[in-house]
Image 1: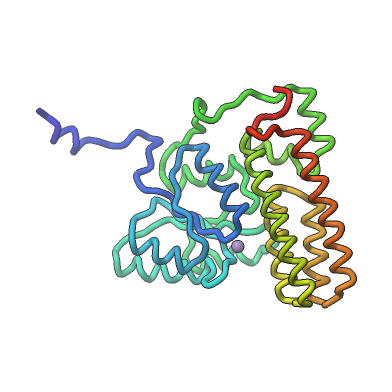
Image 2: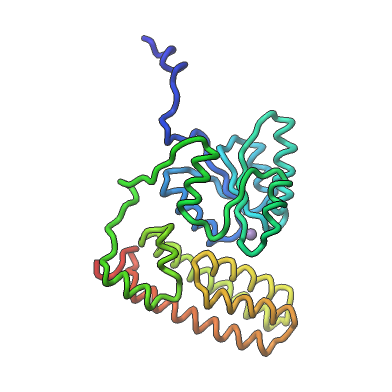
Length: 281
Ligand code: MN
């Protein structure tokens, strides 16, 4: 019938994004945190762990937008952007690139723009800011998929109780995630923190200052993502102690970290049921 005409005039519904997003991020917690936010607004994403893989991915298919971490092994976000832009000049394409940067590094923003990125967003990512940036660069109007993601709100008394006893800043996490998402994120964080600390302990036994500092830095990035201030502070101490080969201080710090992780585990067990629901609801 008049399918041809319809096809020609067809423009996708406003919240439909034709190609996936490419998420370039080496830290597992940050990957998880960003994927949860993308899922919330119904966006598909491909995930790669460094700039090299990002460049390969861009050569293979089209993406609506690239979320680019700045610091990664093999090839960082700045180098990757330069390489992607070079490839795009030849291919005659253009993909918006949003840098995802840690707050601490203020000079990074200028570096991002001069490398060829279009915009930047601070870590840890705030959902509202994220949504606004995506809407702008995807030239669309992405709405939170209410039906899929809305969950029963917390009862007010348990809300207060949780915030008071929480080792992570739950109030801040709730700006971006619902309870199920927070639970998922925190469970992944617990596993990740445990395995990173185990690696740190083995590098401590080897007296390897570079690896201890690097692992402590990695752990700190994960702590910042879930807003665990105490563990983030301890990671910073450990990073410094490792760098200075102050092994006594390093061991002491790891002991405190293990205690903090134990407390965090207990907190999760007390407040979150394994299925992802808040206990008592
Ligand atoms: Mn990174």
